[in-house]
Image (cartoon, rainbow, N blue to C red):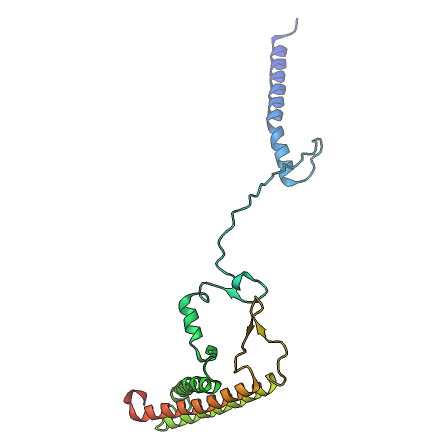
Length: 219
């Protein structure tokens, strides 16, 4: 017969082995999870395939386009936006001298020159080198007149280079209907527009100088 102490030692050893096996069974998924997380093989474990996630993309319904090609034709090369297509913007642009084809080029040049010549003198009067002297108004107006003459020379050079040969192909609509070309888009029309710009610009400068000498708020 074996002693009682030997039986107790054997019982404790078997209980320890059973607890080690239980801990190993619980820790096995952790090792596998760590292996799949690190992406490296672990000795004694079978390779784990990564889970494949399938994503289903549903086509969304057709949305209303805020910006789209003009008249639905992408070959025109112009976009239709809520700003450019608004009636108030279209009316404003159509009333500008540059887009009023029914007015002669000379008159359109005078209108554009009057507006620019009047406003060009302000920065020279208030920001010029003689702004703190008594001759600020006359110096600013002379500078504005000089700028008008320089811009007139630039307009003449552009007209001489842009309208050297007559256009063979006319302007047509999308349906094929002929449209009369703007008179300004020709050598003679551009020359008239430039002459009107010069007269209108110098007249605007003279009117600005007159206001600086008469009205106290302009001095």
